[in-house]
Length: 89
Image 1: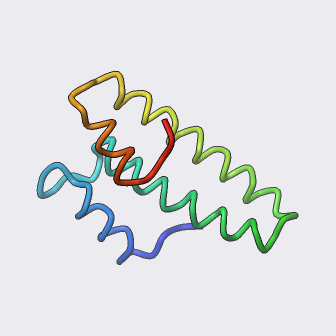
Image 2: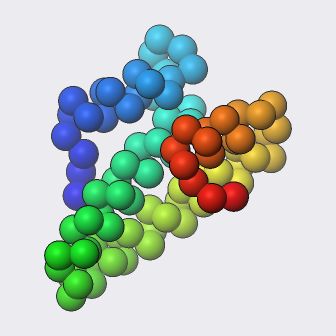
């Protein structure tokens, strides 16, 4: 389940480190978080959708890896992102 283009642009603009930044860990994690939330809502209605479940688990794993990478870099960026996205440690 892809995000609409306008929603993606809004997230990129909010979390970008620079003007043309689309690949920083913060942006990638924020986009993955939005996709995870959208898939969770879908799975609440369609419990038997196993393909969506697999996609959800894949996105959660990728988000976790990116969060671990960001945490290893230090600089307080990890804590700031966790607070903004309201994620657990």
